[in-house]
Length: 264
Ligand SMILES: Cc1cc2nc3c(=O)[nH]c(=O)nc-3n(C[C@H](O)[C@H](O)[C@H](O)COP(=O)(O)OP(=O)(O)OC[C@H]3O[C@@H](n4cnc5c(N)ncnc54)[C@H](O)[C@@H]3O)c2cc1C
Image (cartoon, rainbow, N blue to C red; front, side, top):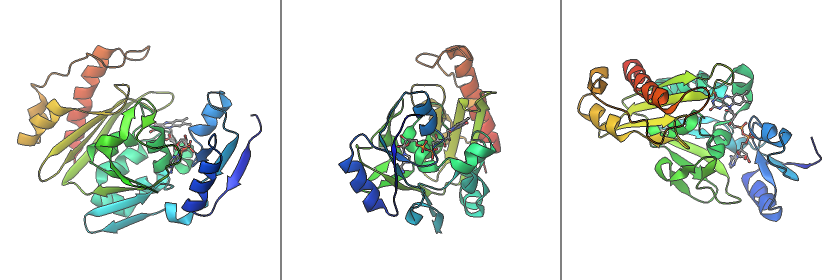
């Protein structure tokens, strides 16, 4: 590892001000993606701004059907939360399927969402649940947030403070994981609301995306049977050593069926 300065901050305003002052600086949350990137010399920030000691960024708050999760909330906390399990079982399930115990104890929802790895799990949860990303300067709907591979709508110094969800009627996440990294080869999040069904896919494209043909089929009949006749095209899907695009298309349908069967 090469030298860098480490800033310990205690509030959001101080972190944002430091980031504006040092344009090449990076926020660090759980470090589970950023440290690996730095070790591989894919990024070389000279300053790290630690978000780990800012109390206002952590925690889970429920108000009626609205649940707000602080950006620094660890995957393990979301997976174990009684509130998340009660309001959005699919989201707790998703958090519990991320990586291994060590990564889940360190990694954060804000870090995962800001990173937007094309195989990460949370982006599918946020897009499937029509979540709102709350930053230090605005609110961004998930539909407008995930722009492409490792690309989001965040501006240079913008900091994610929390994510707001509305509890659906039913939700579930099904993931076919890579056996070594446990990232999604394909992951499908399904959420049924009173007025719509949303289905989001991770691992299969350059970024998370919605599956409109499956949403349409499930909107009139929320059951696995409704998906029998649906054809998932392999066009434009990822193809690599582990899974070609045809296999990923097959997995999308299988994971969608699994998610619908598990939804509660
Ligand atoms: C072995 C291994 C296996 C993994 N498997 C999975 C998996 O199965 N599924 C999965 O989804 N993920 C997986 N991950 C990634 C893991 O979930 C990370 O926790 C996550 O991607 C990043 O979160 P973090 O808190 O560690 O962020 P960091 O690594 O600290 O930061 C990541 C990026 O986000 C930026 N950032 C962080 N917080 C904020 C914020 N609040 N506002 C703005 N920008 C911010 C940072 O500047 C950095 O660019 C795995 C990681 C490892 C090491």
